[in-house]
Amino acid sequence: MHTPTDKLWRVNNEYRKRLAQAQTFLDLLEQLIEMNSDQRQHYMLELLHYAREEVAGLVEEHRVWRHRFYYDSLDNRRMVQNDRAANQALARFNRMRSQHEGRLSDLYSLLEETPRPDPLLTRVPNGDLWTMTQYAIGDLLGFNDYLSELGQLNGSN
Image 1: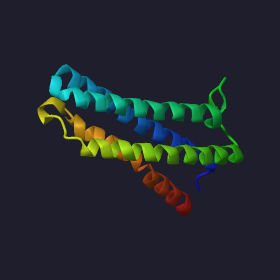
Image 2: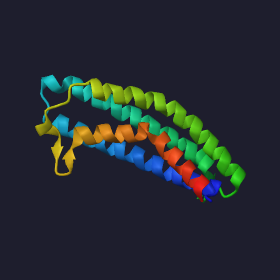
Image 3: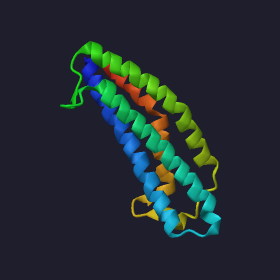
Image 4: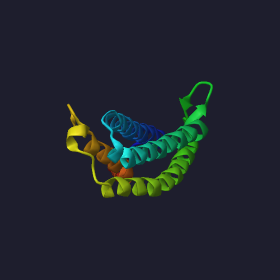
């Protein structure tokens, strides 16, 4: 069975990974559009700038949560070790996460409703950066699925 500290470690790492991926894709997408921009792309650049600011805000809130609840001390940056502190950090994470969910939902809808840029502008060797960005935001929005999966893992061991 996974301990609360194990669950806390997994939740933090997975959420941080997903936030970083969304942030990276948005940064790259904005750079691509900006390099190939004309006046018609002005709205797209504004949208991407807004999206980057939103995700940067989520990253900052996650960082603040880590410093307040995840780390035992900022001096050594060790994760809390006792179950009570880990459970408190998980409860605070869930509150933060539920606040993020509405913002992510709005952001996802905005990207879905926006006419996509020319696929020739957003094509990179790994695929289409526009689609990859949408998936990254979707992965953040679907983080509850990961939490449910983790809960099932806890119950099965």
